Length: 199
Image (cartoon, rainbow, N blue to C red; front, top):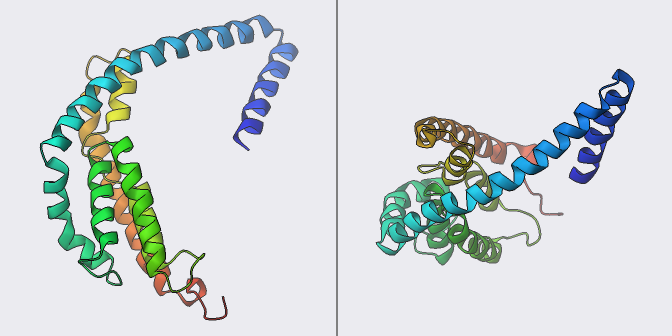
């Protein structure tokens, strides 16, 4: 689908450029953008490596485990159907903690294992349970304490203060998480979205 959207946008640009007699500007814009994308990608390598390295040190120092301990009381309230000592709870906590620190590569294995373990508790295998929906909501709208990717993009784009986005990102992701969790909690109580025995 995304490929078709991109093709459509390029066709529209070419057609509009042809009609308005500015096709040369369209071609120049395309080549300039392609050149900039290479420069941006190269710049991202260094910045991403730096931040990922810092976060990896934090991970090895036990920061994720400490954050996970702080999150555990909240998680037991968000996932009342999952026993507090169940492995799924630990994997979800570690995934969310890693996401909050911008450690996407470290978070993914925890997330996959959490989903797999949650499926073992699912009374309707093959259909997402309330706990799985809630976990996906929190994972997608994850609170970002360190928005590593955004900082890398800003730094690669020449922003003199790329870290100024930290508080904005923190506020925005907190709001998105609150809205997402509220919506998930409301929808799981709605009969229309509840899983019936016949399914």
